[in-house]
Length: 328
Image (cartoon, rainbow, N blue to C red; front, side):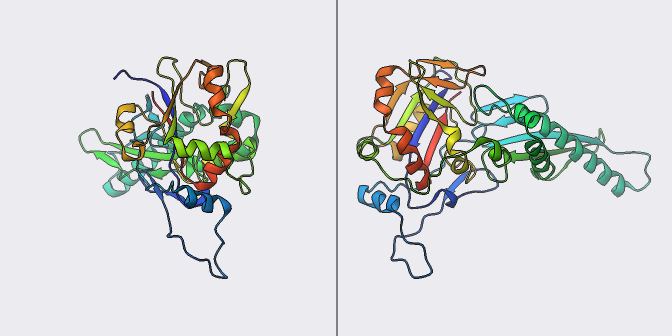
């Protein structure tokens, strides 16, 4: 199929809160799901959301849907891997051949490579689209606290593998990465400026229940619209009415690595997965909007099918398995 850009709101529900999704070193999502049992005095009581999920029998096994590198913006000094939920940068250092202590010379070159990688990572992070109007750089310019937080996260970025040394050229290469959606990643650094909806009291509306009984997910296909990935896309109807601003749920979107947002490029592969055995609802993007082309406009007819979404999204996020997928 053609390369397309598609946002998939795919609903996989487990009995868990939004804080129980974890991410391993490869940025894959793992759901931590406990068997349902009676709570003791020291254990939390099942929430209304959890009970509703049991009644609907919508418990899904955790599956790795997005493939790291599938939707990736490649730049000279690194890449923004939307599928893998990471920003990666490379830095290099040159071994001082005049240093008689070869071990020390190698170590100094590695340290220099880390510093360069950190600088490159900071530049890459600045270019990440937060929404259709702003990049991370805008937040860093407007908020001193965000500038400081982003710098701190970059300084503490994890190293990918061991430093690579080319004995022929005398060059040491180091790769660093940080997460996009994570309390310890980019979304965590931006949280103070984003605001968030309180989802602790979320409940399932009749419309949400009806949708989940009928469909395995909601796919919004932007294949012909030129949609660009961003951290928090918005969805509008043709009259400009805002149907959904995912930024309002930033705290839960970033609660566990990829957690609730994933980016994919192969719709056929997704539809072949067992969790889509029940047909999803597929809606096409009418056109895109915003300076950065990452916001969605749906037809009024399709918009009318999503009356449950604004109220339903907090509930799905509180369940911890609402996935957003975007195809590039």
